[in-house]
Length: 455
Image 1 (cartoon, rainbow, N blue to C red):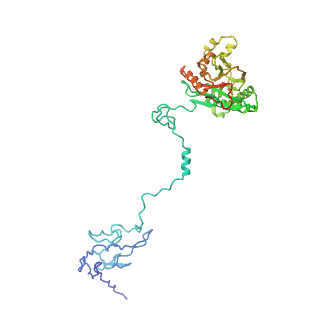
Image 2 (image 1 turned 135 degrees about the horizontal axis):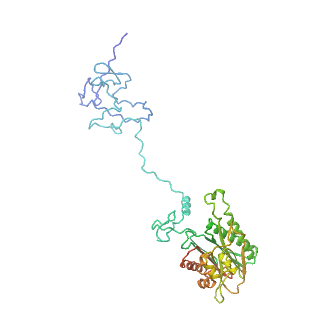
Image 3 (image 1 turned 180 degrees about the vertical axis):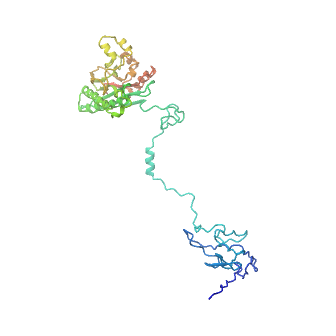
C-alpha cells in the first residue's frame, strides 16, 4: 500500500514566531530577514576528536536525519524541513563551515562568534599568563657556584683587559705569560725566582724549596734548582720531576736523623729515578721522531742548618757562597760537569780559554735515562760567618761567572730579604740579555731559628 508523503509543518519566523509561507525572504509581521542564519546558542560543546558529535540545532529548527524537500518536491539530501533552497538545493547547516556570515547590524548574543567555525574545541578557558613566576633558586647551589667561580685574570700588559681561555687579552690582544714563564716563591727565610728569559719560548727550569727540623729541633733549609737540557725531549717535565723528587726526599730524610750530606746523595738518586721514569713511553711514541733523546736535566741543591752547609749537584748548575759582610772572599761551591771544566782539570786550557770555546757548555753529566753512569757530587762546609748561598742555573752565572762577580750582584741584605735578592739577581741576567732561562734560590746561613723569618 502506497502512502503519500507527510505534510511538513509550516515554518515560523525566528524573531516573532509568525507563520511563514514557502519562499518568503522576509517576515510579513516584523520584517525579519529570513536569509540571515540564526546565531548559535551559547552552549558549551565538549571536545570531539573526529567531529562525530554534532552541535544542537538553533531554536525553531528541528533536527532532520532524512531527506529534505525542494521547491519542486524533489527530495534533496541534507535539506532541513522548512528551509527549502531557492533552486531546489539544500542550504548548508546553519553552523557548518559553509554558513554565510550574518549581515551587518545583526544582533550577536554574548559568548557567540558567528565568524568562528565550530571546531569542537572549547574557547571558554581562562586566559593563561604571558609569564610564569620562577621558583626561587636554591641558596646552597648559588653559594657553591660563587665559591667555584675563579676571579677573572687581568692582562699583564694593559692592566685593563680580561684574559680569555686561550691566554690572550680581550682588550689589547697581548699573549699572557704561562704559569711557568715567571715563578716566585718565598718559604720562610728562603726564596726562589724563575723566569723564561728573553730568548727562549718556554721556561725549562724548575725549583723546590722547603723548611724542616732535624731530630734535635734545629731548623734545616732545603733548596733545589734544576735546568732542563734543551736538546732532550720534554726538558721542562724533566726539571719539574727532578726538583719535586729531590726536595721531597730531603724533607723526608732530614727529620729522621739522616746526615745532610747522605740525604743529599739519596735525593739526587731519587731525582734521577724520577727523570728516568719519563722515558718509559710506549713504543709507538717515537715512531715519528725515533732519534729524540730521553728527557734530561741538571740539578744543584743546598741544605743549610745552624752549623753546616751541604751542596750536591749533577751537571753545570752552580752554588755560590757570599759572606754577608764581604769581609772574606766569595767562593764557588760546585764544579761543572762540562767540557770546559774537563779541559781545565786536565790542564789543557786555562779557565778563560775553556769557557770562551763554543763547546764550553756541553755537559758531561746529567739526570736522564741516556746519561752516563750517574755520579752525584756532594760537599759539606762549615762557614765561620753569616752569609747566603746562591743556588742557580747557568742562565744567571753566564752574567756573573766568577764568585767575585756574583758577590757584587748579590744585595747586602740578601740574608734578611731573600725574595727581593732573588728578583735582583734575575733582573741582572735579563738586563744582560736573558739568553737562557734564569732560576735562582737565595738561602741564608746559618738557618735562622723558628719564628725568625725573612724581614
